[in-house]
Length: 426
Image (cartoon, rainbow, N blue to C red; front, top):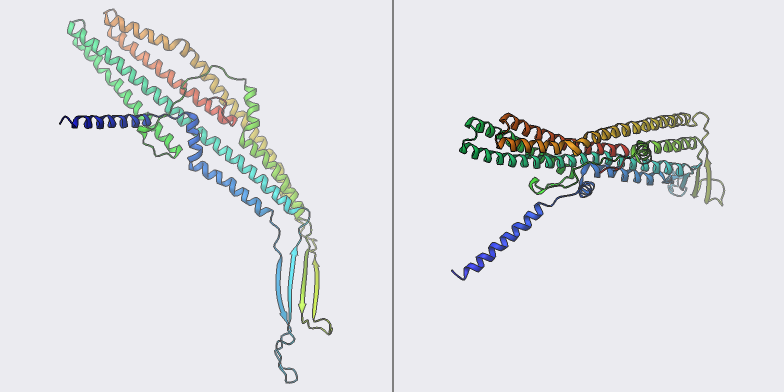
């Protein structure tokens, strides 16, 4: 038995170490940058949007391809009726291989390639815009998780504080300082704190589940956590700087401007398609059926030029010209939308800052002082039970409102980032 004790002890230490390592791994928290990196690498919707850029880039190859040459092989002169009683079916057969090629003029291939490249740039901007919107959803889920964690910590702290009050009140009850009915009323209030704690636990799990879905991650909720600065900054750059930044970087506006360039290229291509493209052909004839005894093997050539009398691609010329104006109008609408989005988000952030300033500077500390003072007075018989319960309720209301305002500020900041096109506030 004595020899087995060290073995058992070593096994226990090993299990303890393994449990500690597992716990440390389970408690590893992801920062916002880490969450965003995982999202960019794993989100299926974002990866599907990225493939559209590759598809558009493949179309550039197709656009620049030359027309294929045409090879025609024909025969003639095969005898089907005997001549002078002699039947030689292959004696007079001539073989004619013909090779033709359509020559495209006025830089049609180059213009098609330019249009395809501009389409790829538009597809890239559309991908950036889709990423911008998806990252806003991701940021909202991240902020919601941080807010749920803060509210859970508040609920735990309040329950611990209230349990301490119950213990003190029980001692006062045993000492005869308070009546049983007062103690019962105090104890009954605990159910509100228990309910708040359970709601906070459920809300945090729900927020984590939503975040894991966006990350396409199958990690158990218990082993997943995030960390970040759940606070606000009371400094905000001038609105004009944000407006100019959005005009320079907003991907949907860039896509609208790139569409104008593509429309202009498409109009040039429509004009070029109205020009005539000749077809050059050459052929070789063996054993040709003619009266020239030296014409057993001959070469021939031709040029085919379409006479564009009626169809000069007039419709496409007019359509692409109108498409330029439409693209310009859509770009102006996109520009107006940028200003509207930035202005609205900026006002919301500014409003949340103004609401948060007095909370941080005054209200939260004041609510704590009032609660502690009334609690102390109640413990010493200088305050009524109603005053004590009201002070507890006011403290919880102020602290919860402060955390929710921070969440609203971070959500508004994410909305401003969305309006500008990249992160300016974290």
